[in-house]
Length: 383
Image 1 (cartoon, one colour):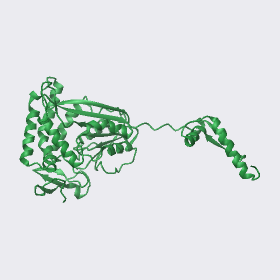
Image 2 (image 1 turned 90 degrees about the horizontal axis):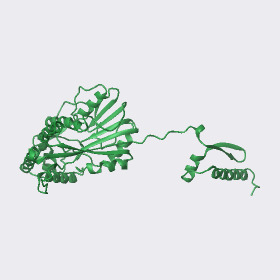
Image 3 (image 1 turned 60 degrees about the vertical axis):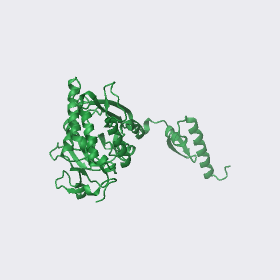
Image 4 (image 1 turned 30 degrees about the vertical axis):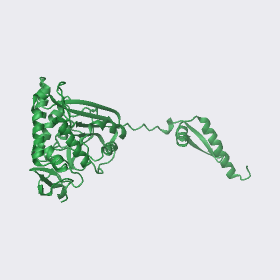
């Protein structure tokens, strides 16, 4: 087995698992064991976060406050009441896909991931597939009404390409929604100075460095809106949300968000750091643990008033232009060789010939030229 950049081969071993939620090749069931945590061993994508039970629990905990910040909704894109086909990219435990399948029982819901960590007991209108979103998709283009993506920072080589892929596989009029966090935590305390030596800054900087070395950026949120516009989406909306890192707020709803987020971070921080910081950047196990301990203390400290900014971008693939029936178009007759006539759509012909619309006069002149050349061909004596 080849090692990823910066990995220490002595600390990594392959672990085979027999249980799977899909019929997939044995290579997809190989996991890397790093410092007691398991990581996906996909040959096409080296994903930086663990996929063991501890991380999967954290994933499900995050789902609760990620829906809370959206007003207890699974998404905020205005997809309508009757979506027929929904795709969840990077589905993880499948918890979002399961909930959306329950909410839209008449829709076909598909969740894809590189890791087979989804349950087998799911709604009948939901299925999971092992698929790498960075590779060519096996679905039919223009076949989805809604495509959802969440928490994929540090996992994608080419974000503009993925956005173009999403655009291609949406039906005309279909919607996408993308939710990501800023990896740099902040404080709501205006008197707290977050300098370069603060752990919130340090944590973000080491992840930015690991992302640069991996070729998969953790700086996603600042570009999501422009990626959507560049891919061709219209009506693009960007919304920003603040999530407390612990239950420090007085507001009951925010306090509950902070409780869930704090528990999520307690479960996640060490697993987040082991691979990108320890293996990619080459930090020792002890150095990683010191950084994690400092971050955990800062997150738990209510005096920091810590928050994590989250960003949602959604947009629509333009509706297909209506097809005009021939009887509704402005047609004229063009004589051919002075004998035969055929119908010409003036506007369409003008667009094809000149790149813009034109009046009937140009078409009449064109008809005269065609007729003259036709007559000359039939009667060589005509000059």
